[in-house]
Length: 222
Image (cartoon, rainbow, N blue to C red; front, side):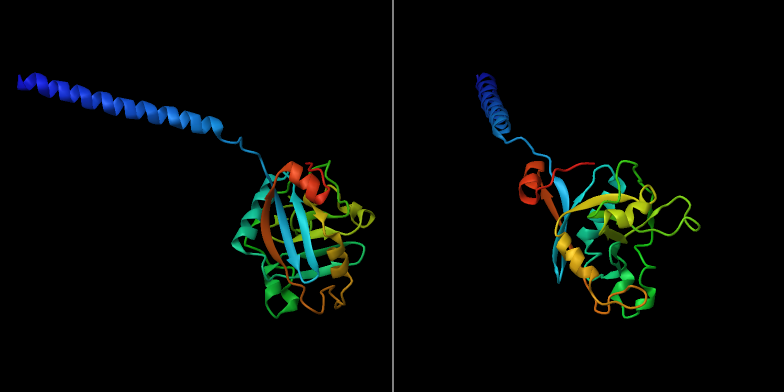
């Protein structure tokens, strides 16, 4: 008699546990069904200076450079570095950790300790507003590998066209080119380095394609 009562209790417990389990599965399915679909977002660099901010779209066609600058920006690598080489109607250059010290003569020779394989694309040209990677010349760097951190922003399509298909272009300033124009007009020394440090900070922003179109009047490409 005791055996039958015991088995009946076990059966009851089993049915209760099964009911709870099935209810949980059903609830999970309902909750999953009601979740909003994930919307892909693109990465934007907010580059802040004392002259204002620039907002840079990073091209997906150059994933190595894109991933690298995102990593460095998140680590705070660029914060406090300066624009150390500025040439009117050509470009402004920055991203060298050496530019943080008091020795202006070593600016342009530093980096994170590695280079990036080139991602030169025939279709991506050096237009005004483009973000491109600095590098050593072909005589020392025949593979045209990019600096691990140094970059330049093009100020003129005509002034930078000769760099097409020679340097990796991996982003575009969607908003804030007036900031670059103000930076390049600052007084500088014989090495094109501003006499007063123009420091930067970088921040990562994620936006959908529609948000980018609305907020920056730019249609993502590449």
